[in-house]
Image 1 (cartoon, rainbow, N blue to C red):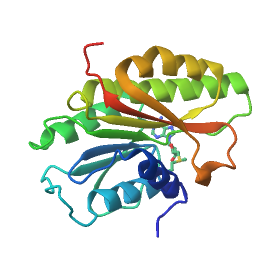
Image 2 (image 1 turned 180 degrees about the horizontal axis):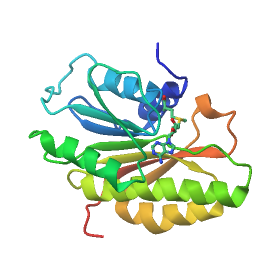
Image 3 (image 1 turned 180 degrees about the vertical axis):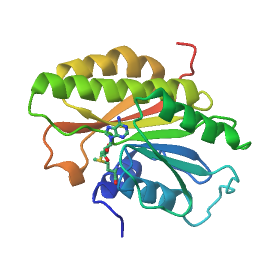
Length: 200
Ligand code: SAM
């Protein structure tokens, strides 16, 4: 069982696009109460198959709200848009000699409370998506590997962001609306795979 039904959205996305693997370093943005982190943990520590488990496996969860501890997950409470939180995150990543500050997968379920004012909702979604993308751009590991999964508000402005930023940086940007989120009409997820590298 998971802390949130959102966990099933992430598992559904991973079943479809296969971005989680044992031994990865994963950053979970907008993680409270912790369902996605638990889902990631279950995928990263699943039964060993052919892959050798890596010692550098790591999950870092970030949220404005407190998260009840999850064994195996590092938690940072703070605003992801604030430089203080970003510095804490970078420090945690750098402290681990195995990860050398790099990340395999960034997942973001961040969203603000829908205000009902469409322009504000679109602006906030764009701001959170841009910040997640910027973080991924700086921290994603090698070319080819590396995935960014994020929730976004459905709107032409977000479609432009996908075209102008995401599609230039990733080999493939999938759009998906998991079964588990069918009630929430304005939200969708992007699963960006095949990081092209930070030269752009
Ligand atoms: N994925 C989570 C789970 O499975 O438990 C649910 C996440 S909930 C839909 C969205 C979260 O985004 C909220 O907990 C909210 O506090 C967080 N959030 C929104 N803006 C944020 C920001 N600027 N920095 C950090 N977290 C943020």
